[in-house]
Amino acid sequence: MDDQRLTLISEAFPLEKRGTAIGIWGAITGLGVAAGPLLGGAIIQGISWQWIFWINVPVGAVSIVLSMVRLRESHGPRPQLDLVGLPLIAFGLVALVWAPVRAPSIGWGSDEVIGALVAGGALILAFLLWEGRARFPMMPPAYFRRRGFATSGGVAFFLMFSLIGSLFMIAQMFQVGLGYSPLTAGVRILVWTAMPMLVAPVAGVLSDRFGNRPFMAGGLVLMGLGLGWLGLVATPGVSYGSLVLPLIVAGVGISCVFPTIANAAVGSVPINDSGVAAGANNTVRETGGVFGVAVLAAVFSHYGGYTSSASFMHGFRYAMVVAGVMALVGVVPGILSPSKAQASVPHPDDLVPLPQMRGADAPGPSPAGTL
Image 1 (cartoon, rainbow, N blue to C red):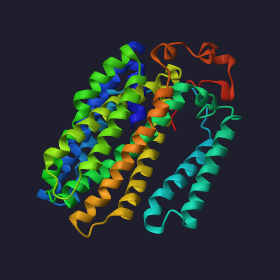
Image 2: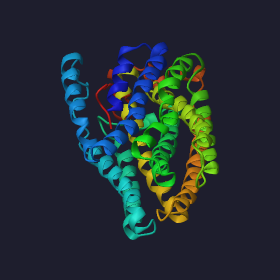
Image 3: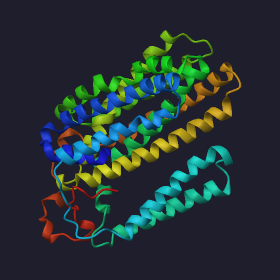
Image 4: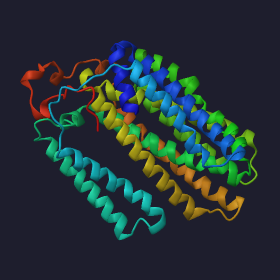
């Protein structure tokens, strides 16, 4: 859904205001992130855990009605689907995701996990080769040679690896490691999850002025330092006050990166192909989140467990240090991303009239075309 929302934002706002608009979108998304653990904790504690799924039904129903009433219908100009590329990328991603999902229970060295990784890599390679010769490619390979597109994908992967993996562990830390109830844990985690509501709009406005690179790279530095700090202070019986500052630092870092990678991704391609860029970036983010949960869970299991609070906190510390390190690794593509001046220069391919372009060279004029 993020790719569709970003496409609508890209069409509704001019380039010089896009960062501000995406920052506001990030704040609204942050409201949902902050409300999730709080509302979920209240439901689990007050009713039962099954109701966390039913709470989405009325929200979805209202969203359907509003979409039918308020959204304008549109159709992409691509005359046909990429019927070869679509199954290649779909099955390739399924295989790559299957590996980290199964690894915690059967081991990273098992034939099934290794086979899934190899198969996923081979299918994605086949997808890229096919896209280079397809008449109407769903993902023009030329986009991967654009610094803004490629580096925003790298940043997105490491951001979500650390974010989703650490969220999975931190929510458990408050309950298993420190003994808080689900509702109390949801309240106490707000110092981390509420940061996007406060910081994302500011980061979005400033990115219009200074570019995306300082916020992507700087945000990942703060995120890495905050999560590493959290891992160092998380000991059995640690006071909540000792956790607040590291959570805030990490939350501020996340809030700086979240809107700017979206802005960098959709700004790296022609405006009429922003849906493709947003969809690709969203795919990379989701893949990073899956790997983050799997890898951090494996690190936790190696060093700790659920037998006692002390055992949990011991494994948690190592998992958070790894999450912090992976966030710092993401600083590299952040630094390599284009500066504001470089990003403002039109790409030569974007200046060629669309009717003269074919296949892999075409920028793919389709707001609706996504991965």
